[in-house]
Length: 567
Image 1 (cartoon, helix red, strand yellow):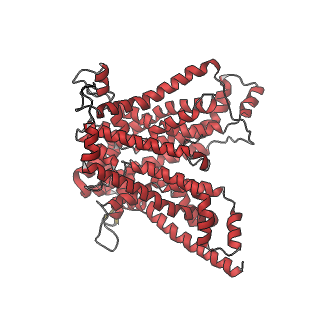
Image 2 (cartoon, rainbow, N blue to C red):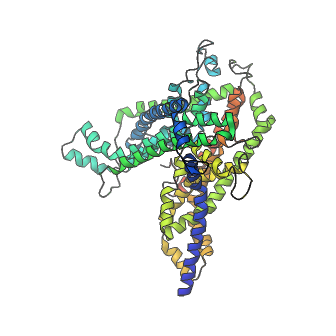
């Protein structure tokens, strides 16, 4: 291959990288920058007056306190549950680990509004399941979940999978030789665990705790469905109530609230990185034997206990949803003579909003997956080939739209797209603003698996194709795309799975005609149509589990680390 051809190929790569980077930056970082500008300016001039006024409002301070309390204690609940499961699954000889891990991932994949709805169906005086069993509280008794404690409890269950995943990964990297060396040195019993194993798991534990806190802080579905009826507002629900009640006239005010949520979230992320940077413990060398602890006679009781917990947090609430969807009215006892499919038929076949929401959610999720594949595949490869300063900067920041709470991204998108540059047109109130928000939100979900797979790619194959005169686009089509296709497919399914039933972003962006499934469930429950909400929720849970099973079926063909629950 001539020098001229090499230079031409290098220039083509540089031009393509620059073009895709500009598109990616506009999608992911421009909304965040626009939000920051709105919060620190007043009619185009730098000013902190509005920020000071909004932060001084009693409603803001109350919502901030509520957010910190629910997210903080919810994280503690997640920590207890997730850490217990992680230690037992990663370090012991439990049977059916793959099935257990799969079940533990389902709460994280189920939308938070469905989690809240399902649990309200197994508690309180109107619970169909409790009435059927004859153990329902008397009429007039309060719904115990409509409280800070209820929000904390469900946030803990919803996000325990994050702690489980991060801690399990850290525990599986500890070799058996470390414990054996400690025992040879005189460490015995619990001292071995506290002085050897626990310090090695602290970075993973800190990372999982910080991510869980940030995720709980931005959770909208659970605080909205449990907190709004109780008059207990968190920052995301306060933003929703202000925007729903007064529209775009309060955009400047809610942008300050969004910045406050983002600031607390970023503080949590920085705290996680600080904890990791202070760890000076390193494992030198490796072993094929991971740390293992045989349970002996305790194995069966431990397995029974773990599966009982899984049944309580996963299966029992689904029974509550199913029971509610099969009675003619909420609160009616489920008997053979009261069983009816009227709610299912009404919501799935007679309500036009449901078919519209299915079409919108499917189109948005599939479209976002397809577009992100087309952007992330060449971008990840070019960033590996040409490590420019701009590429490195983008790589360090591209997780921001996913790490920030969804309500923050929603406000940022509204500010950016309510009036398009050089025109009076707007995307606010259209399906396109939700689509662009999904591209920004789930960019990292697609990009990171593809990037991880390309890091394992031998560049000699691409260099060989280039040496025989293959053009940039020919190499992308015939070499890069086929090799990274499994990771891209896994990323696309994860994006589709997450976007299909998303609520936190679309709750502030939808309008009549652009409803998504998450919005429809929230609105049905809010309007008192609990039976139809339960039927639709059960349908979505079925779709989620089928998609997860599909990923699990092909997980061995995906690169290691692409599927979160891969064993």
